[in-house]
Image 1 (cartoon, one colour):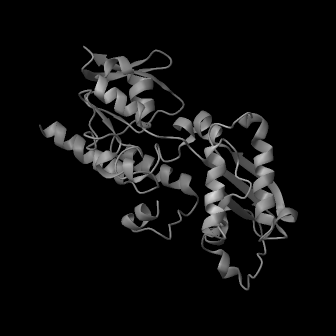
Image 2: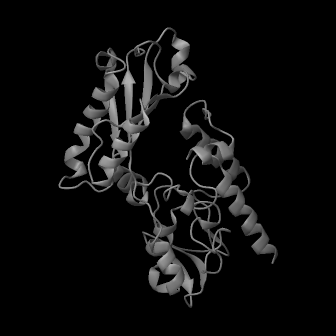
Image 3: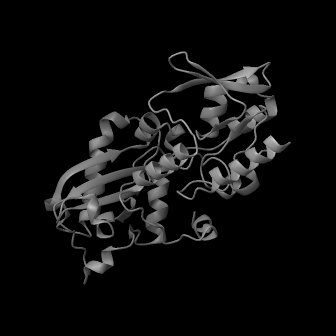
Amino acid sequence: MLFYQHMQGFPGGRVVLGGIGKLSEVLAEAARQKGAEIRMGVPVARIQLNNDEQATGVILADGTEISARIIISNADPRRTLFGLVGPQHLGPTYMRAVRSIIYRGSTAKLNLALSGLPQFNGQTSEEQLGGKIRIAPSLDYLEKAYDAAKYGQISANPYLEATIPTLLDPTLAPTGSHILSITMQFAPYELRGKDWNDEREHLGDHIINTLTQYAPNLQSLISNRQIITPLDWEKTYGLTEGSIMHGQMGLDQLLVMRPVPGWSQYATPIDNLFLCGAGTHPGGGVTGAPGYNAAQAVLQALKG
């Protein structure tokens, strides 16, 4: 991920004024102005095929059929090709490659509504809170945190990365209040001997207790909280195995290996079906690059 972030040229990250949802709203409005029709809350049940070789449209959950010359999926590769197309329509080599994509999400999220700013040990100014706040005291600390997840356990001493977006955009909260957004690793998608539905609140407490060691006044500021477990990523947001990047971002799943070897140019073996999500090159994060590249591939296909 360090390599990927620097390759993309955004190691410090950027902030969307009004929250990340505002970016979606602006993109949607731009699309509508170009004639696009956007339907929300209407799940796609499956992609319609002609003779197992060519995508001809989609069938919605309510039975509505929509024909299309080109279909572009922003869902992850496995959800698109196994869930919406069906593995029986894929060749054995390609099917095995899609099945072998490593997802294995290990990221949880905790969003806190605060009545004021936390005070961290050693902090001398409010400006110090304007960037990313990382809890990673040593390499040994990180290795032990990851090691726990390998065995289906929540890291006793997790890696935390937090931001306070209200310092850059005060409109996100009432005057004097703040949002603390914390990404936690490592929380395995599959817990050994436990269930995420039972462990959700424990996870939230665990993250807060860990961060309180570095910001002693944090507990007293919390007015509300939202916990997102790896299982929530899958059930609520449709992310296979809770993988927020649509597949792990290891070197074996980057560049020409993403999503699978031999198919890194956004097309699929199903004619007229393209992938454009984070599971394609260059990967996850809010870059717009997979969609832009996929659009170029679609335009080239239409010319042909």
